[in-house]
Image (tube, rainbow, N blue to C red):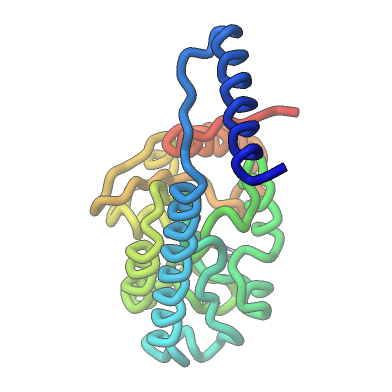
Length: 238
Ligand code: URA
C-alpha cells in the first residue's frame, strides 16, 4: 500500500468513527492536540524545576545558621520537604528529636499521624510541601521563643513565596499564631480559612496534640475537609 492510500484509508476510518459518535448522540468533541499537551507538561516541569532551584538557593542562604540560639543544640537544620509546586503546604512548629536527627520535618510519631491525615484527604506526602516555623529543634522540645521565631520567620515567608500554595494548613498554636500574626487561641482560629497577606490559611490542631487528645480528631478532620474544599478535592471512599 502506498502512502497516499494509507492516508485516504485513515481519513475514511476517522470519518466512519466520527459518524458513529454522531449517531450515538455526541455533538461536539474537544481535541487538545498532542503538541498543546506537550507544551503544558513542559511548562509544568519548568516551573517545578525553577521552584526547586529557588528553594535550593534559599537553603544555601540559610547556610550553617547561627541567627538565633537554637543552633547550639541542633544536629540538622530541618528546611522542608515535598512538592515545591504543591497547591497545599503544611506548616508545623519546629523539629522534634527524630526530625533533628534525620533533617526532615514530621518523621516522628506526630509525623506518622500527619501522614495519615494527608492520606485521609486522598493525597500522599509527596503531593504536598511540609515545613516548620523554626528550622532547628528547641531544646527538649520546648516551645519556640519569640526571638527564635522572629529570626526564622523570613525563611518561612520566602518558602511560601516560592511555593505559592493555594492553601496553607497551619498545624497547631505556633504555626497558626505566627502565620496569622495573632495571639488568639487555636481553638478559636480553627474551623475556618483565613486570608492573610495574600495567603489562604487553614489552622488546625497539631498532630502531637491530637495524639494526646484523640477526641479532637473529628474537629481536625472538619478542618481538613475545609482545606479539601478550597482545593476542589473530593475524597473517594473505597
Ligand atoms: N512537630 C513539628 O511541629 N514539626 C515537626 O517537624 C515535627 C514535629
